[in-house]
Length: 132
Image 1 (cartoon, one colour):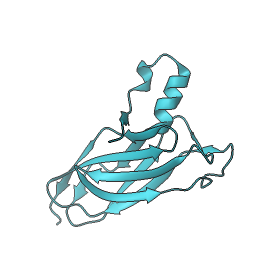
Image 2 (cartoon, helix red, strand yellow; image 1 turned 90 degrees about the horizontal axis):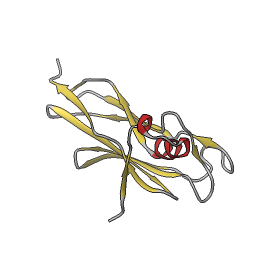
Image 3 (cartoon, one colour; image 1 turned 30 degrees about the vertical axis):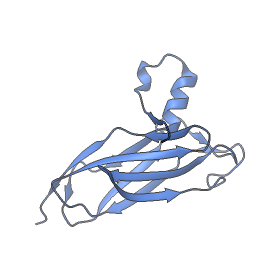
């Protein structure tokens, strides 16, 4: 089982290099605050908020996964160079359309960096109401 790294609030971190390291490797979920059962719901996962990640042959974001609890909903795989290659930096981002059921979503994103391993975000809970 690989070690799973988690985001920590970078405002509590003293060293700029550590803030950069934590932020650029962490996936962040962006979505509406509520969803309707049976209707498409957009969820964007973006790597980093303030810092960009390298896109080198030996150091890049290889994949992003979106989970609802323990259920894998979607996964995207990237190749080196998809953000411009050697020396380029950027924030991988993917938007998924999911169709929720049940009374709430407990969304979690995971991302894999080829050099620094597996990273997970804090869960985002989204209430799901009945369709009208």
